[in-house]
Image (cartoon, rainbow, N blue to C red; front, side):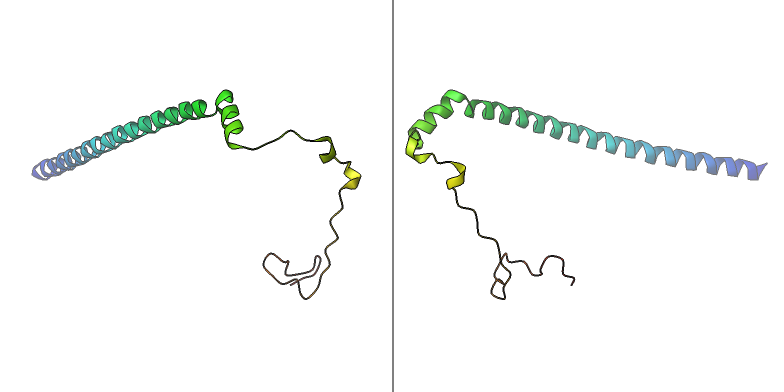
Length: 113
C-alpha cells in the first residue's frame, strides 16, 4: 500500500507540474497574441491612412492642375501624325563575333551548350 501511495503522489506531482507549465505557456502565448493583435491593428490603421492619402493625392482636378503647371505638353499638330507604313522597320539582328557585349545572347537559338 505504501508503494501505491508513493506512485499516486508522484503522478499527482507530475500532473501538477505539467499543468503549471501548461498554464504558464498559455499565458505567454496569450500575451504574444495580444501584442500581435495590436500590431495588426496599427498596420491596418496605417493602411487606411495611406489609402486616404492616395485618394487625396490622385484627385483628377489636382492631377490636371499639376499636369498643366509642370508639364509642357502641347496638342498634336496634324503634321506630326504619319501613317504606319511611314515608320521604318527595325533591321533584323545578325549573329556575329562582335555581339558579345552586355545584354548580347551567349548562344545561337537552337544550339546546345
